[in-house]
Image (cartoon, rainbow, N blue to C red; front, side, top):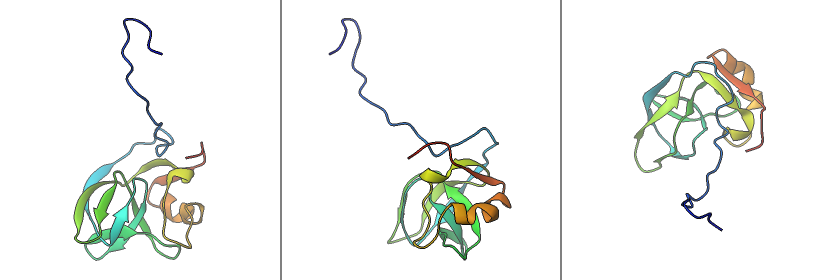
Length: 116
């Protein structure tokens, strides 16, 4: 029910990827090797970035969804910041918590603040 004089603006879903105020530095990067959601942890793969596994060295967090399945695409990535572990995506067999120390070395801090 809409109250008289007001317009229904629809609904919104909270963005739970960001988890704090540590300065976020972002840049445009080349993404390769698949279709990824916002919050994917990325590693270097030649001159591009791709999804990070358990034994890889993480480089960045994907700031926007991108489909680089058939060709490399440009997308914004975060190089620093605080992120919610529940909102991160990693390769099969890996976990955000398992990459926590490696990410911390890059000034990417993982927190558990709310479910995603």
